Length: 200
Image (cartoon, rainbow, N blue to C red):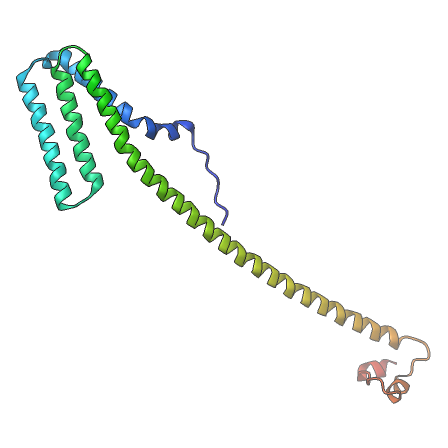
């Protein structure tokens, strides 16, 4: 019923928020390394990256038409955008255009990620609310059952105490000097058990 409270490290909380910026920065760095190693103004490399970007976009369109899986479509279009960004950043000379594309790609990645983060947050809040409602319901049932069990125990305890007090009274009455059980019966009091009469 009581679940352990798990405190997540701040890095585990910050990592998903930093992932889009890390991804676009990594693509930019790799593209600039590729640029320095001969991709600048290379028509063959530009054609290759354009083909790969168009292929990833076509895969996204096909996945959207056949399965309708938004995660798969989003992944394919993200790959297409990353390939196009890497191609331009690798082909262009100088940093202004690659940095402009990096800022646009980062903003777009955060825009797409924010949508999924909102959905996840809504799902998490709904799950927590349902869990809290179930806990309250079960806690109420537990309280009612605890009260019922306590009442039964108290009734049994009071019955046992009454029986013990009655037995003690009978024993004490039988030991009193001058006790005559037949005189009590003649007076209209209840008849004592045979065992008590014999012991008297």
